[in-house]
Length: 111
Image 1 (tube, rainbow, N blue to C red):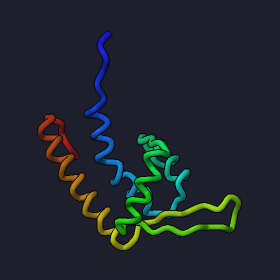
Image 2 (cartoon, rainbow, N blue to C red; image 1 turned 180 degrees about the vertical axis):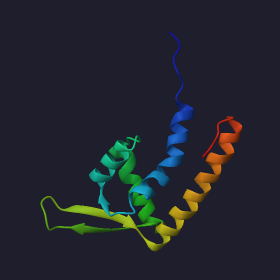
Image 3 (cartoon, helix red, strand yellow; image 1 turned 30 degrees about the vertical axis):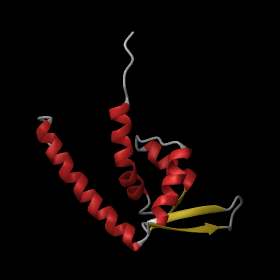
Image 4 (cartoon, rainbow, N blue to C red; image 1 turned 135 degrees about the horizontal axis):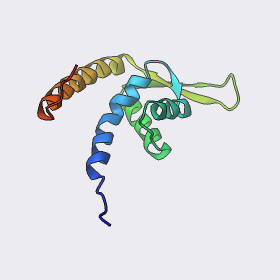
């Protein structure tokens, strides 16, 4: 039996995870709801990957967060900051261009 090497797939997913997270945080979400939204969209992510990423994006100024203590348990909601909105737009445009380029490389018609 030949083992499959997922290194390429893992690297590809890691590269698009930031864009996926930013796309889902156009509406404020807490960590678990964000994980669910990503999984429902076809990109499941582990807590050990997501939460450090959220902290890093917040430290970079792309996200803002606030605690909501109106309900139990308290939840930390994340949303795009102004800089995050700009970064999301730039990354989305870059992604669309890469899809166009790769479509040509893969000889697939891109719409």
